[in-house]
Length: 240
Image 1 (cartoon, rainbow, N blue to C red):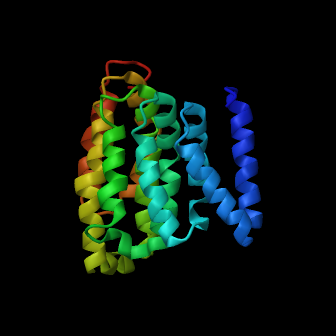
Image 2 (spheres, one colour):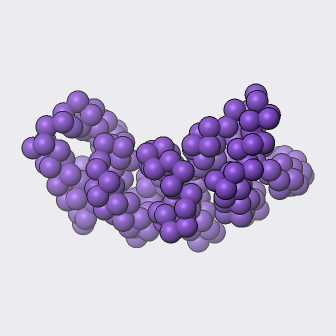
């Protein structure tokens, strides 16, 4: 595999475009799936990095069985020994999560679903201090993607407060609020407390999006505002 990233990026985009235009062709579909399986297990890290991009770009085109298989493969890519592969997998994790939640709908909030057993634990692991900054930085967008995707499947109309309240009184609404408060927002808070100022700077620069995404969930602002105060008091001038 060649090591020029712009070549791989263009090749991955072309492959994704071809897949979308030819996915109805069963022979092409099987060949594309076989190619992803080969790339994801290649010895050279650039191939595995390209696999993470392609799986993310075309995840919504897979059958349910194929999606289950590629969720497992993507989990392995997110834990790859090569930081570059983990960075690419983390970068595109939010896209897969969005497509997964969109396709699965409210069922994705159920206990035992891959959202709770695989995707969120991956975000938690990739946000840990054990990861290089280039990996952890990607989790900022993933948290926003999670919040937006969950809001979308709940069909929340922010302008209709009455409707929003009714939604949060449902079982699914309560489950989503609990998930946001106990699993996703703690991720955001952990990034605010990161030792790397670059991570804290990234969170500070996206804080408006965090508030816009999560403020509709009960109790979210009570958790977010104290962390914003810490960012405003940060010792790094670029952050505060």
